[in-house]
Image 1 (cartoon, rainbow, N blue to C red):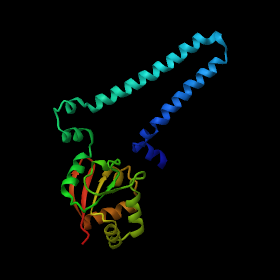
Image 2 (image 1 turned 60 degrees about the vertical axis):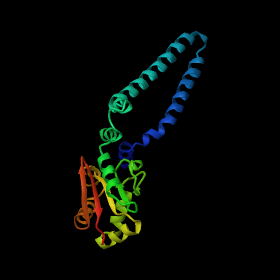
Image 3 (image 1 turned 180 degrees about the vertical axis):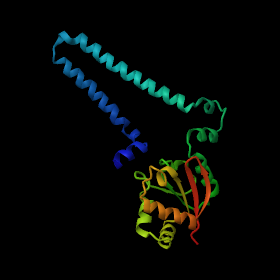
Length: 210
């Protein structure tokens, strides 16, 4: 269940695209060879069938591309009718928080990203993010340290000064944290962190560790 949840919520399915293309070629080749076994009398049916498969595949790809095109609506940006900031804000719900983090944080400060969809490329400041299970580091710190003193020590050793997270997957119904872990984190944020910004379902905090 956890594996399925991770696969759906992350964007790593795009990494399988080359494999899908290769499998499609194998499928068509296999169908062609299979139909050839029935002899030359089926050549017309074979060509018709393969043409139908290719046409359906082409239509599917075109519909997918057009759907994404209408969703992104890139023309205003391409024709310079909107700025990069406006385009990214329109496309990425968490972008305002990334922008604030870049503006607010110092060059030597580091933010822990938790369930921020692995968009570290939007950060101009140092950051720490788990590639796969995106709450792994946060859970590990909470589970191993438990008490505030230990958590503070761990954060200092890692150089982490801020945390940026998706509320839905940290404190919400889809949280990857247990009830106990959520309680510890909530108490720690109240006592040892300053809220910088809340936008949509995303929150940015600065840790107060001294």
